[in-house]
Image: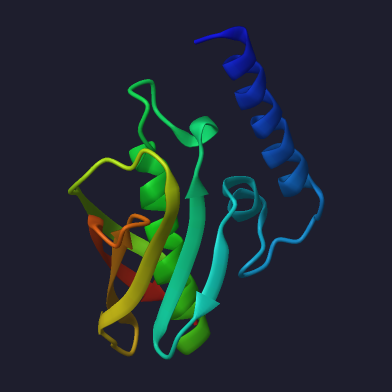
Length: 146
């Protein structure tokens, strides 16, 4: 890496941290980690959409989006949907299948219900790269916190 590229990545990381610290809010749609990662949360019917830009500070040493960032975005898409439709919940288990690497662009994660229950619900999230290619799929079991 050149010094100029290193400086650009450091500046981007500093800007991401400043964005996260700009607010003390810890609420659905705006909490520290979501602001740090640049998540934009929206809803379309009974789907929660999380969008964010894949930028170098979020990459692993291989130069692709770190799987943990992608898993976090998919988890948020499911958890925010559950909260909006049913109420607060907790992830009991989650499985992620990675299908393709992401190297740049806007990533879109779409959370939806597989089955809604009184206390246990099953959700899924599909992650797409900027070209619309499916890059990951997650399923999760959630327990309502009533």
